[in-house]
Image (cartoon, rainbow, N blue to C red; front, side, top):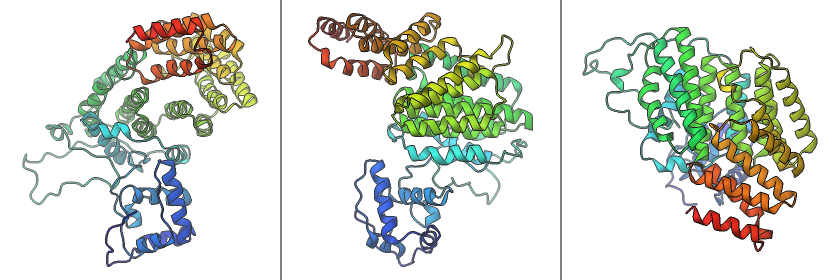
Length: 488
């Protein structure tokens, strides 16, 4: 790699952290190269490179952020490139910070909203990083609750601002974008119960659209709503009780923005939204919702094949809630762990988690108080979880039984979930040697996927088609391919 010309000042910050971490120069270089491989980068640093950094040379590109992440993993605290005396030219970990305060959390998530609502296509190409799951989940689990989130009304100032006033600068490593015109004037808004009810209603609307038509259908409208409506509220004034509810509503909408990003395969961006939703949930004082965000993160990790990280996230969620949560929530958390074990092929652990999930749901009673975000988790959803797990474990007869039950119970409004379940059933039928039925089911799913804006729906169908390859010359497979081709 080519580095910038040497600076005159030795980098004492980097030297101090190398000593604290107990690295040799060669050891640090090796770890940077290894971390680069996780991001698809072929780096060739050595002990001489580190010597140059210590003398004041600045590494280019994403390397400063990678060096900072090496120290973060080693020392167990979040460090930025600036903490190491390096230029953060490309902060690949920006947006993964678990903010120290509610105010900092608003700055970070507001920067994400503003940049995502514009034409910043590169933001949707950021890679998912398993390493970015560790620190936020740990900080959520052991972090201290926020003592205060209330905000006092901002003092009135002349339109031109106070003489000598200094414009606040963004925090290092925070993704920022220019504020929308007129937004600054709205930050004095006093938040009311009606404002929060509106945020909650918007969440229900976008959830319905996502379930029926896929995350790509209205994702951009949701992000713009967050930028133009939710952020001014967070920067407005509110008392303690209102503030907690406001952060809760913001956490829910931010998680949904991440979920819809995940559904269009913008995985790095989705990961950042989930981390920030987790932090907003902490500001809300809503431990149970934080566990739901972690379950969402676990789902994404399962989808991307990071089963071990998915197990850890599900278990952190369980630890964070304890045994006092409603049975439905407990069932959801155990089912999430089961899915992670399933993708790893861990039969005993998966089966044990499914049993815990089933028993928890059986303990639920009519009239139990269930959080709105967990209301979807019913017998149909649990049967779906069983079907996916048995499919991943190649227990195809059980997978077919549970998938059929889920389809019988699942309401039509959950169109994408029904599509996924139909593909699971098709895969199970294929595994049982029932090629005709498998192709018929998959053709129905492919037709549904063509009507949605969901990369996950398309990938489910494609994954099934890869399983068809050994049967490509069979008549049912040729018929299936003709039907799919006709969809355009």
